[in-house]
Amino acid sequence: MIRIENIAMRFGKTAAVNGVSLHLDSGDSVALWGANGAGKTTLIRCVLGLLRYRGRITLGGHDVRRHGKRARLLVGYVPQEIGFYDDLGVAEAVRFFGRLKGLSHADAGATLDRVGLHGHEHKRIRELSGGMKQRLALAIALLGDPAVLVLDEVTASLDAVGRGEFLALLEQLSGMGRTLLFASHRIEEVASLAKRVAVLEHGRLKEVVPCGDFAARIARNAVLHLSIAAPIRKRAVELLSAEGLAPQLNGAGLLVPVAPEHKAVPFRILADAHIPVDDFELVSHEHAARIGTERMPEEDRP
Image (cartoon, rainbow, N blue to C red; front, top):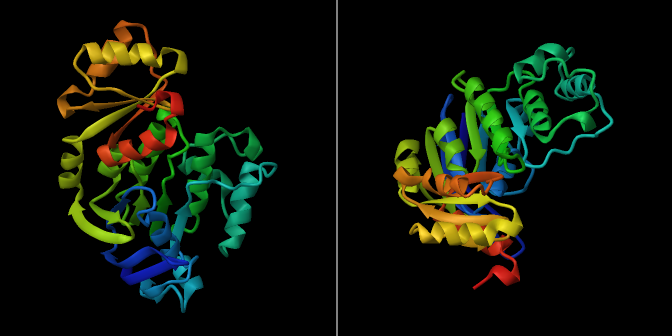
């Protein structure tokens, strides 16, 4: 269904994607994994025909460069950043994008019900929460029942509850013969949705591995990223350190390396001390290193 053959794409002198080849059969599900700058979003934009590239990409047998319109009719796409016009009505947005996709009539009610937005038809988009806007974007992506669904870090801006709800929705919609290509740095998303993981590094495809093998590898080297209010972070560090853990301050909370069988330990320690955790995620050591340097304020750095 998706054939990516020796794709190269440069921004000036920088090779954002360099010689990547990847094939997805109908019904396959592949996660793109890698640090910021690895080439995940660039590769997705090449697949969508949004960037000029060297090499060849086909969707359902249609060359993306030569027959881009036909190829894109097969694709539903949800980007990381949603750019809706906030004064547009929710049902009106569904019908508008349906017309753009060439659908003579889009049943807004049924479309919204499919993603859990029944009863929100008459709201303005500005009245929706972040999670609801993501659901609306998914509903629009699914208009016309596309054979391919492409997602780019779609839960990055959601809190833990919103991520869980959106992931549960995607799981419900998977397994229907649709091909899925998505970028993520959250192992729970990869484990739930992917059959294979394509690991990108500095624009090159490092490896493609079965999802089970990849998830087990990440679990052996996991780091909890805990979002904790600034006034109590250093107290949290003291408590976790006293229990033999090695927490590290960063700009949004703490990074705590944990063994797979001990993921709940930091939560128990903090709960016993009445220190609330506002949000959390389980990340790889590589991602932890990145968010540690990106978000750590000067006064918290060693």
